[in-house]
Image (cartoon, rainbow over the protein chains, first blue to last red):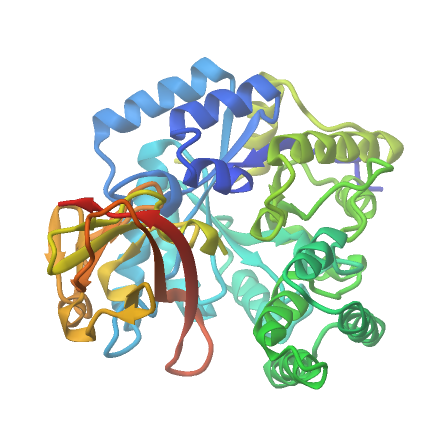
Length: 364
Length: 132
């Protein structure tokens, strides 16, 4: 029987995008706030969001950054990096350009002290295979994010998994994003649509359509995904409010994924990092649209000892509630769920540091 | 994503012939000039001519044609850019309705074999103009 896992509590600063964007906090201020709130010890940052001039990182800056991390008692988990293959207007990047583009960011992760780089689905199995020696050179694990509209058993993800197995590098794995396995539209999103003038009738129809797709399970492939996206657009048009169509499509397929929780078992041994994606906390102190308790239980039962970054994404539309309050409440649900599963979340930095080191490959 | 923040309140400036306003990225991460696909500037219902629009970021000024190949200068989420165009606005005490439309390419979201996701965001705010 698998020993129960003890996931590391953590947060991604992406949860506080609106506060950072509003200049309420600079990076240091935001780190101090998150530390004071006890949202760590795990700390995840998006390179292109938080570091001016990224992926170039001045070594002296990196040293100061790492000192701040230590002072605040954080344990660095993932640096989220981007596979910007469409950065040029005349064509997509070639494979060689992409590998070089990713190398600079993987190096930045290493210089800044992050043991994991979150990478994205725009990297193919061939790209990941080409990047394996780069990851090993810098001692940075590449954790490709499985994000709605994909899900663990999606053909593209299985192709990546199979290639990881074939390549055999311990530096290749996945980031599990809970948005792939949601159970409903967030009430705060419906409220945001209401505030923008969406009719109750149309919102009820959107919820019905999403629930129907939930019953059917996630789309088999990109073609079915496209059909569903189109159905959301069509629904808004039928209700005479076509301006909501694209938004329904993006959120209905790309933010709220309908895969079942057990689907994650397809890639469980390759999960190196987790985005505890969520959208809000209700009056009962629970997440109504993401099955946080089931997901934590699944990780604990499968011996997962990596970090879970609480990733609050309700800020996309929820302008009226405080992100810090919401993250605080969600982490309480995670801790409670780990206890219910007979284990606990790690909140002590020294313990978390040791657990993460054991969870990730040994760096030469 | 963050369209309500595109126009920085109280930043409308005019020299009588051209008007300028500070704008913020409606996205969570930095993007290079090549991903700034286009913009519109309308004040009191009048559009600035497209060919007169200029984009200033990181102390450099660009036409939108120049931004197409710009991979060195990036628009950071905490930084303002300045959008300007030929529009005669008086620096009087009157309120002006400023509207900015912005199109951005999201370079990691590929929607077909060759196409990149392009988003369009729009913001409208009312403010007084200050002499440049």
